[in-house]
Length: 570
Image (tube, rainbow, N blue to C red; front, side, top):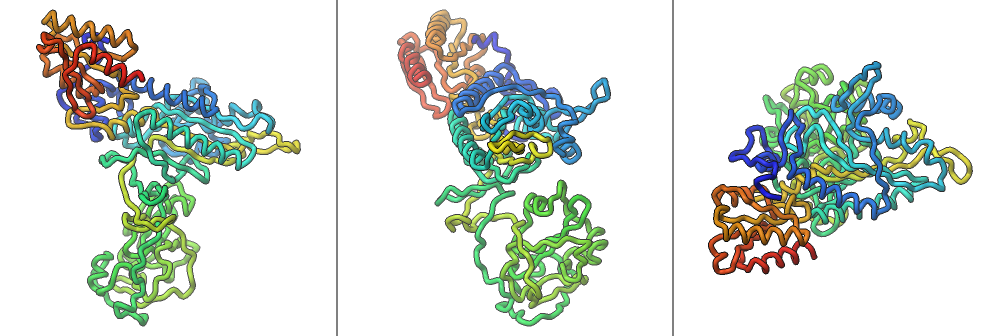
């Protein structure tokens, strides 16, 4: 491809509305162009990247035994009503009516459709297991689309769905897909970590995410991991063994129960200083509203609530912190002095976090303003569940080593769905005894556009994108310093012709621009290798530069061509 013909426009400055570095660079380097909020056109450079990712995905999915199909982007509401998700999915589901008044939606995912596709085709256990996949556009009407392709409204995704007659068969395919995903991302030049995760709106009992670990702020989630073993989990699923501080308030002088005046002392920090007691000996009360119903969480003072865990614990769809007015309405007291004591549990659901287990002689609010109860002990042992956020330095639940934390970008996920969709939708097969049974299902997704953006988040520098060569739009940029110099241009043309003939994806920058402009564009766009033809061609030499390392070599034109062949074709 000649640069003078390539449909690309690089920009001098980053777009004003971009936050993530991948968003900034994709726009500035001419890969995408915004149409409207969260929706982008993929320009020729980007399309080449996506085509390469798709090719890798298809090769590995096919090798793993999956079969490709293509399902519709527009879906009828009837399917979603059958699965029970039409009313509960939320405003992210873009709904519309066709000209006949039928309710439809733009596909955010395809569980309902694939279940309807196999129903009546897969009828016997002898036909199972089957894994079907497609690569398709999706649409989720995000309230605040941000980070460009990392959290857009329209995106491209590969999703696969497997159908089984037993849990054992599902688990085998789950492991098969996990291995395939590891190969896919490795071939895309990305190291990923498979982490335990929350299933969210997709559902299912077991799920994992494949995360590209990155320290950039656009990393969506905290990932806790152990360096001594394979444990890794998203923050909304991570568990830990707590450090064992002394949680007996007796060591601070509170061995007997008593009501203490604490005027205008509301926060854990203020209470800890006022009573001269460690926060681990304070039982904190946090009031939430889950699907319009109050939920009171009792948690150790040095811990925080993980809201996704709480959402799952109470089986709610939405959750938020309660207002001061709601605290008065449900508990009769202002925030800072709240407690489960005296609460009508028929009106307010009370949850005790695992961190409260083993606490003695602790401090808690009495539901009276400006007072706290010290030296308190549980009168009855409550039921404890995990709704707390893990902190770095707490201990691995598997081996006990300290957990570390990093930021991660999700590029893939796998779910064991079970019968979540097949049962309500009546999708059955006949087992060996002639009985109808609902399919046991698995679901496996890869964000194609997210994978490209995550690669940039991981691999970039001050000058632009540093593509892994596996998914770069072109591999080599041949740059004549002076396009008007016949000798330089002639040598560049020969190098370009030889590379193209060898099957190396090459760009010839034949523009009449200054060399500095060409070099800046080359680094901004992220071509993995650059061959510069300048004055040294009179000595029979060109400059070969690796974008990733910055290493520069002086080679003959034939040596440069051969080096590209060795690096890119072997």
